[in-house]
Image (cartoon, rainbow, N blue to C red; front, side, top):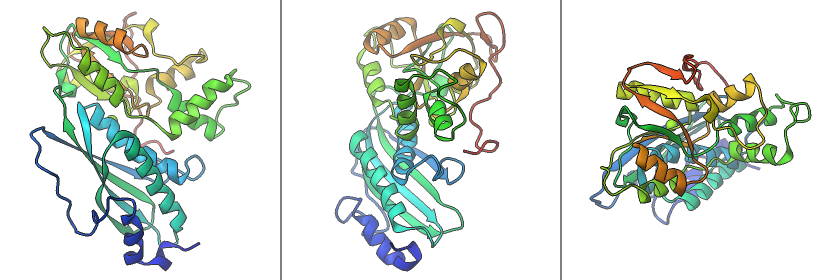
Length: 328
Ligand SMILES: [Mg+2]
């Protein structure tokens, strides 16, 4: 099986072009058709040893996760249709072609599922494997910003949290499934969630459909890629508000074990890629009916920077996933 050094750049680019629409990679630029909707852009970088590793992530999963992380940010901004992505690939010359083929296969699968095409990109030799993806999409009627929260809003999330972190722990054999009393279905869901996360365009679409007619298009929002608590803190800081979260409403997955470590993974494990929103109460109520997996967590308050639990204790500091401190 050939390495990238053996293939050479021209052959590599020719092979990668097969993952894009015919002729798309022939030129050094891509042209997007004019569109009255605002263009939303997002870039994410995934580095070998930090965001993926051969021990826990196949090539196909690395490609899928890279796209899913980008598209999750688009969904959490209010993007309802994806134009596509550009991919910057850096890899050592001794990298095997079948790894690169697997990554682009995962990228194609994710784009096929969520929309968009490979618009362009670049490759270079380097000392470490790295994928830099820029995603482009079109804004629907609601732009979700962290600064969009207002006092009185309800904090809602599209699903349970902690599964991705548990999946990583299982793949790294950090937990013994027997001693933690983890049922088989939960383990399978956790590993799937870690390997093939899903950007929540479905949850965004249901949110858009269920807005009460008398309310304006205004809500706060982000995704929980860096952890649920970090997402809530980001919303509060950007909006100059505080929050009271209900301990009884922690969005644990079904069958989730009890205990501090498990609560920590649920609240700050990261890479859950759920929507975290602040909505006027009537809209939050409508969304909970429309989206049975969604959870209402608490209320936004006027007190800037006062981010507390209902018993008065402070939300654990910004203990979300910090790329400069923690490796995968
Ligand atoms: Mg994010």
